[in-house]
Length: 101
Image (cartoon, rainbow, N blue to C red; front, side, top):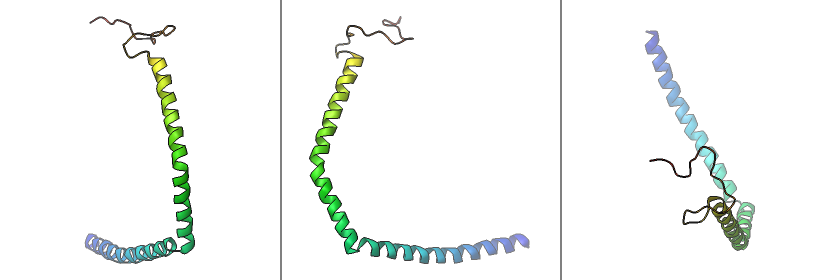
């Protein structure tokens, strides 16, 4: 009998908790929408969008420059594309240059 009482209590608690949870969720959602629709918040969002649009070309250029530098550095470390090593580069420890097949 105690198992049935316990399960009934869990069921009632779940139903009541779900109702209270949904009501609280709706309160939070309403408050968030109110804050989002606040004119000062929208002004700040608009300002942030404008600033991002102004800075985008500069950031794009810096990213392209950094990527190009990274590719150059990796190419120097790895060697040329034809598989030959550049002068002064050694084979990493544990790797044979021409492994036996």
